[in-house]
Length: 310
Image (cartoon, rainbow, N blue to C red; front, side, top):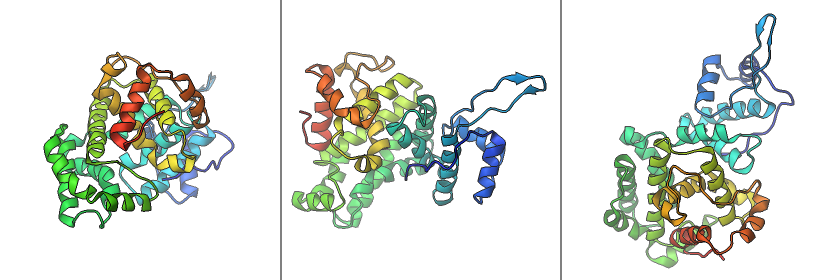
């Protein structure tokens, strides 16, 4: 995945988007554009005044035109709509002006989908989460396959069998020295232990249920994004990009798993501080204080990554 390169300097109508696609070698129809708007892959066009000859077609801004081409390119390599939805979500995680929160809210619904709809959809979700453990040096082929199917079944039924999952995951984290060597060789460590892996899985399942329930709001989305930036504010943008969408899901799952930590019900807005840009992370960290918000960050860092939020 990558950030779309801005290729236009002016907004355009739906006809312009279709023509842009044709010039880039893609055959699309206005119906596809409307469908992608409904799924959050594109923002709704800006309405224009109604003239004497009737209403004029709405305008998509220059970035949305560029985003559309980037999504078409992604579709040619990865046709799953849930994978394409990562593009607007990743962009929103770093810049809410290019992709507004209202669009990101629709995009995360598309990204999550309904893993319980079929085992194939659940398997797709499982492969995302098990990918960091797919290195052949970790466990055996049978170990990795059994964990994949166990995670698939978890997404499919929407419930975690902790004992079973820990038993399937543990061989991939042993011996510990080998796991750490493999993990660091891939550029970063993912989980401190099988317990940390299971916690992230629990977060993902809870986030999926929360998103699908219709309880997610734009304010919750923005606050989850702000806290993700706080936790990983020490990383560079290049390091943050591959963690963006999974990080958002983890923050939403953390909230859904235990909203009592911050004293709110899941349907209420989070009280966590916001952050406009990754550069704000240090400032936000200083403003957290010793309250319940810090407890949330510490719990997540300790259980998932074996670290501590100072």
